[in-house]
Length: 426
Image (cartoon, rainbow, N blue to C red; front, side, top):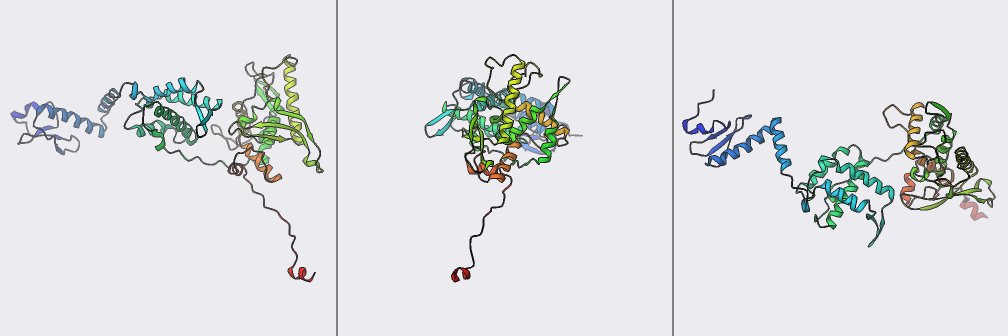
């Protein structure tokens, strides 16, 4: 039983843990550890205020949920109003998105004092990331907050296990804070102090056997509870491999990029004859190139051109200009929202994933052992083995060439030297 309070301490009965030393100084006794700490004051009102703060800190440290909620509410109420130099990040992101990004005013630097607008695909990705950040409660803090780095790290924390996404969102925030510096809201971009996450390098080479087994599953297309001939999907996979380009560049190929008249049979070796050309320009690097077709690639291209014409004829549209010039289109047997529209990477990747699961290369709920994007590495690796150094990947650097070549064939040479003794004797 605690000792009864003295009469001159009766005023403290409503404040458990608040006491007074004989010299008149007030103290706080931790209700959990029973240790005492002087409040260094003889003023009762000031002591009560310090007691309330001390008790809240102790309750929070030892898991008092009611106190936690009160402290959080007080902390929220202490957040500056979102305006001027204290504008909240979520509001500033929205302002940047609507006034700069969506208006096409965001540029990338080419060289000093020169830039150009970011690509549409990049802009669309930025818009999506911005809207995602705007919706998060964790982005409701002032862009001039003294704890800005801590708050940004908390904001990014949900993507720690997804390094690629984490780095993309970090890049968007870097752009946003760059604009905040230019507009005078802050003095320095805090993203400089936030490191990127390491992204593991994907080195997957699809075996021929796996490719055949996966594409076999595409031969029959189950659509709207009916079975259809899915050969066109296999031919697309074959062309993905032969062309060996990024999915975004492959699925956007236009008929106008194909030149079947560019035939060159001047080489004595028939294996080197050119049976047509495809003009390309990489979306990512803007590096342009021309792929000369061998007979097998030409056959695949001609097959898809005929498939496209047949589908347009079924729609009665073959004699008037189609709505687009894409080589790859969905067939007429698909739903109205798909038919004759350009085939997308997202939809085709879904078909590849389903086929991989049926072929035993993907477990339900997992991404799968082999991805459709791995076909670029397979194509460029096999091409390197077949013909040595080449520019088929349209890479801007030698390092990226090496990145897409997973097999390095042995270097070959032949000996032209004779014995020195024999040479002297001759």
